[in-house]
Every structure is written in structure tokens, then in C-alpha cells.
Length: 518
Image (tube, rainbow, N blue to C red; front, top):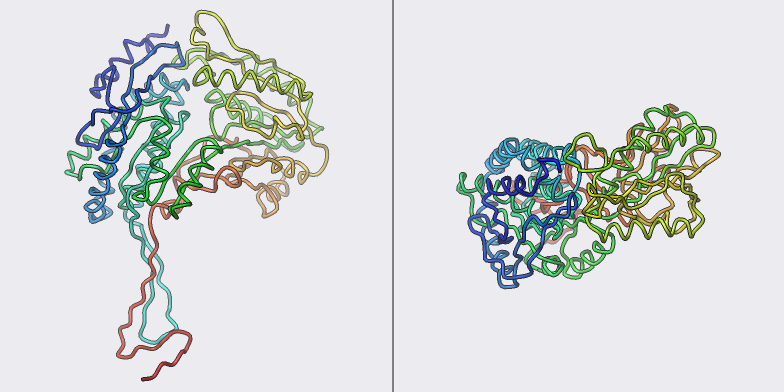
């Protein structure tokens, strides 16, 4: 076993944050509540070891935590935005200090490679840096009034407590995308992490609590509520929470969206993806190969932006697929904290079952396996969560192709005609997160990016579908949910807009020229 992944080594990492083997998962920042709800077991898919248990929230503890967050908001919103930004800056500095350790914990608890674990912590640092600058730019517009001696403008105010429900595949980064922006906007946050990776949330809460205490921030600015599905349901139905940001499956998102919408709250949804790369006959095939390879097998196919479909022109199909199959033969699968390996495990055996069922379905529906999949066995794969990345030749009409299987299964689809045909094939799924085209033809690029092109929230040219930068707004359309996180003007999601009109004259003229004389 790699010494980095030894359970004793991970225990040492946890001790620096005072995380014990059986730890409360409910915190208001200044204190850890008892955690009298569901007990969550954290097991590593790397080697099957139980890392520890986390005690979730009971309903009374949940209510206590939300009430504390409400009270914190009343003070936190009055802090000048640049002062809130300074707190976020200090958080980023602490993340820099703990980058290696937190990256290892992410890798071991979730199963992604150590480099990807480090990359996830770097995303946290990057979004904090972005938010610090944003704290001095929460600007509105000024408008000319039709009435004399009047001035109109708009301003943005914080919403209140923001609930953040995150998925297992990015245990820390997605929380930070929401949290850093929400904090500089004047909101407080309530985090419900995936029950599959609770220890990562404890580490983040420990790190940020020290920063908040150092700055004498009110208790409840950062609230953590671990627990099972019921905690997410409580958050979705809670009228005290104006915004619920939820990342996960489309099924989960529909339930959250319906519950939040029923009470006329706001939902920011980041849901499933069924992402495609179009490989044109005018593509640079070496670039296409590298982009497709990482997009398909990175994080063992467990990214919402994972490349699941390649739509390849007939003229380059044979040449490109030969290159791809050869590259798959060189993949090294194993301990993700061993930097020589390319692919780590799936999150748990339930995910492995979905993978094997998908492989069977591909064959039942007439698919042709170019690279056979399967579950790996042996001492080094003792967790039972390691699988082979697979490639299948399919037709776009097959039902399995239109579904998202959270595993390293790549579908190859031929096209023989205009790029518009490939774009139509790409768009013919219910999800609309990320998309790419590989081409050196400017006209194909522009058609792909035009109003009649890709219908996804992210559309790339000559790069893959995964690896979004925090400077741009992240999110997708259709059953991906329509939400936007991270960069650009996504900050507006966390605030309420107010239009103001000031009359500095001595009369009260009405709009639209209406007369109302007494």
C-alpha cells in the first residue's frame, strides 16, 4: 500500500484539525453540536478501509443551527463588503497552507487522483481570490428617468442564509464556489455535504472556523449540517432559507426544485451531464486525443463534465479510434495517491453495480465494445471499486446513450456529413452541461458557437468538456438545471435586486405623463 494512503497517515491528517474517529458533523462555527441524528460511515474506495464515523444532525439540532445562521446574517450583512472580502482572503491563505493535506484527504476519501485532489483545493483558492476582487465590485446600474429632477439606479442586497447541498465527486470545491461568493455578497451559508464524503467537510469547517474566529465574525456565518437525505429535504422545504444551491443527479434536482419552488424560494441547480466532443474531419487529432482521454477517464468518469460521447466524422473515424484504443491500453489503474496511476476507483460498490449494468445494457441494445470493461480483482483492488474504462461503438438512438452513467464508459458515434448533423446529434439528449468541437475550420467553430449550435451552458473549441475555469459562469441547460455558479456575474444569484428612484425636485410628476391634480 502506498504510504500516503495508509489509514494511519490519514488519521494523522485528521488530527491536525482535531477530527476524531467518531466526530460530530454539525457545527455553527464556534461550536460543534452533539450530532444526535444519523451516523455516517466514511469508507475509502481506495482500499475499503473505514476512515471514521460522523454524527449527523437531529431535527432539533438542525433548527438550532439554522436559527444561529439567521442571527449571524443580521450582523454579517452590515459588514462592508471589502471587509467580508478580507475574511475570504484569509481563508484562501489558510487553504494554501493546507493544500497538500486537504488534497490528500479529498483523494483518499473520494478516490480521485492526488493531482486532481490538489486541483480541487486550488479551485477553492482561485474562487476565493476571485471573490476578494468581487467584494469591491458589487455594482448596479444608473438609469435616466423620464421625469425631470429624478434619478434612477439599482442596487444589490444580500438574500440571507444560503443552503449548499454538494455531491461526492467534488467534496470541497463546489461548496467553495458558492460559499466564497455568498460571503462577500453578505449572505451566510449552511452546508449539507454528501454523506459519502463527510470528513472533507469537517476539515474545511475546521479551517474556516479559525479564520472567522480570528476576525470576530458572528457565529453561524459558516454552518455545517451533515446527515442523510432528510437533511437535504429539510433545507429544501425551509422557508427561512431563500436560496438552495444543489449539485447532484437530475432526479435529486427535480425534487429540490419542486420543494423550493412551491414555497417561492430560489433554487440554483447543477445537475447531470451527458457531454459530447465532436471530432471533425478537420480536427487536429492529437489535440482531440488528449482532450478526449482525460475527459473520459478523469475522476474515473465521475465528473458532471465527463466526456461520455464522441461524435466522430467518418473520414477520421478509423484513424482516431485506433489512436484512442491504443491510449486506453496504456492507462494505469490503481491507488489514486500514486501519481503514476491515471485512474482511481469509483466511489463505492453501488456505483460499480451501475457500471456493470450499463455495460450489459450496451450489449443488449446492440453496442459493440471496442475496449471491454469489467471490475478489477486482486489485492491491490481490494475495495472492489476499481473498474476498467470502456469504449463502445453505438448509435445515437440507443436509450443507454441518452442516460448519464457516472462511470468511465465512452460512447463512439459516427457522422458523415455537415457539422450541423453532428451538432444535432450532440443536442439530442436531455442534459445540456458541457460540449466541445475539435476542428481547425473557423466556419465549423462559429457554427458550433452560434445560436443554432451547441445548446449547452458550456461550449468549447479544441479543448475538452471538463476542466472549467472559475472566471466563467459554470452551469448548464435543460435537465442540467439552468444554474450558474463561480465566475462572471453568477454572484447576482446570491443577492436581491432593488430599483431606486430619487426625486430631488419640488414637484411629484407621475410616470407615463399621467396627471392627477387635486
